Length: 164
Image 1 (cartoon, one colour):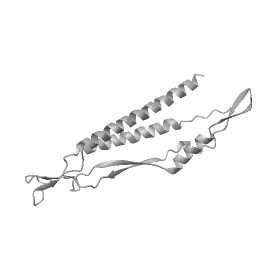
Image 2: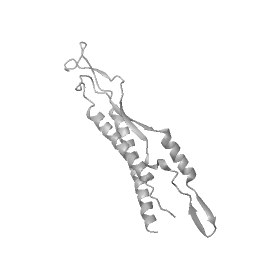
Image 3: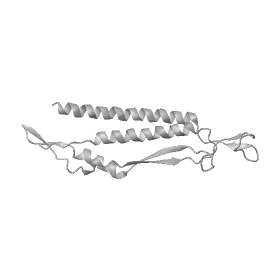
Image 4: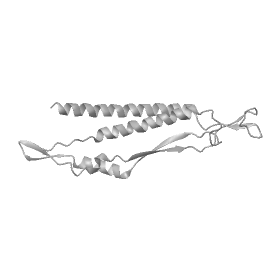
């Protein structure tokens, strides 16, 4: 019986942790710029968020893999495994993320002495809500912890398999 390493669980968990770290970085950037009324390009700061896309091809590969990972017996005294060579997509984790900008208009505050005030004395503030950002931070932290737990469970399973 040929033993082949299968690190798909590690790769999926690592990719999930990477995406959640990127989300936390964006939340930190948004909170840091909650009062930035003028950026380098001269406009008010706009909230950034991460859009995560899992490609359909990857989901199909996983569903095909779960259908082929079964055992068959040709002799009642021993068990042979079906070869997993047909699962070629296991190293391709097609989960992409991109940073997008929320273009909604921020709150307008009356501050006639502010250097960025318009002719009526109003200043457009960034569209960042600290409460929303904190909720996103907690959600990203919990998701990161869940991926870390899954990674550690996979590591423990692999370690126990080596001890057999």
